[in-house]
Picture: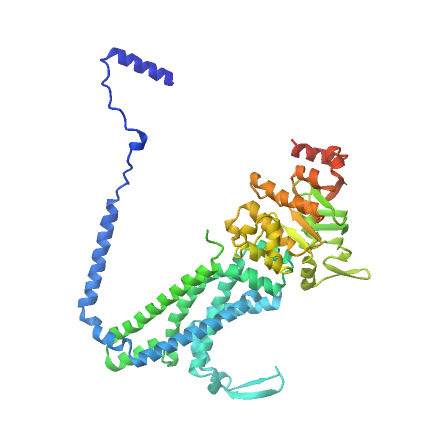
Length: 302
Length: 242
């Protein structure tokens, strides 16, 4: 083929004038690479920037935002106290919830049919009931059992409490959040455990490492990689879910701003106070998430 | 050291081991050869009770593995005791199975019996300089050498190798076989499932040829490799030896 075409070229050349000698092509190391242009990127960026500018302009000029009220209440004492309660509920809910999850997940993965079905039922029930319904339920526990007793099951009791004194509004809120959280945490932890390669357990078993130590040293640290992003998600969710406990008249952030705007009628700036605090707290959690993930990611980075 | 008597093992309706009996003397190297699916790995895994036998007995150093004999009954041991028995038997996996979140040194010390000796063991497999490296930062051959050091950290009575070089790039096989050769020379009791016929010929005291869940033939390398008596051994070797 190439022979043929070079023959043809030879024929053509003899039939015409001698070809103009072309300028010597540049050597390969003289060639410059020109990156491709992306004009539509500029167009899209400009369009979005216009929209952002419009929004920012609105924030600054629309008197409805009422920034002076916003700043007046942002660090106000009752708001600070409410913020503390929100943090307490989040922290306690997360600790109790994940403690429950770490117990429920291995139960659900165990070969014991009783443990397995109890865990399964718990998760099923507490994921099914809306948090707000559950909270009201716990708050009204006194209607169901007016006294609670500590003692031998089906046998005599030792200590006796009035339900309403034992389960305060805050207690009911915490109980509801913790149980709700435990059900979700259990599934997050279970997903993490399942993500660990079966061969890791086998290697640990072959080394004769005791069961509990296997879980603590081999399984859980590896499961953490899969658990953390979901757990962080759940934690952010919990932070926001604490606003639901306003139905129990607990003075957390959302309840407190409602109280204030009920008094002064400045709804939007006060909702904004709560909103900005939630955003800040979520940002803090995201930073914590980043560092925790980095800790458990050791050995996975090159 | 190992006494295997009449071991049967099925996975569902698939019979993987049929009436296998085998003795492995202390200080010897036994290489198990056989086509894939012949039950080599399963037999090895029965020795440290990673697989439960359906019938028959496995004894290591006279101790019944995984069961307690009571008259004519074999009672399965609780996991705690099985784990204790395993802590005397090193096991090296085809896929290394190092703990990825631990450094080489931590991997070796995790086998606990000799946390202080971890560095010495890494040195023995030529990887003292990689003590702080995570498995992911090591080549396959290096990972397998760490895994061997980890198995040795148990101070094991014997070490079982389940196709230790099958997951390695060809140029990395040699370094792992070198380490195993050194172990054999040092008198470690070893049972090795492998396809490395050259290694088997050089290092093995006994070669066991397994096919269809039965031991077809066994003996010293010169007999089994160079003068196989059984048709199936000959057919297998003709495919493996080029």
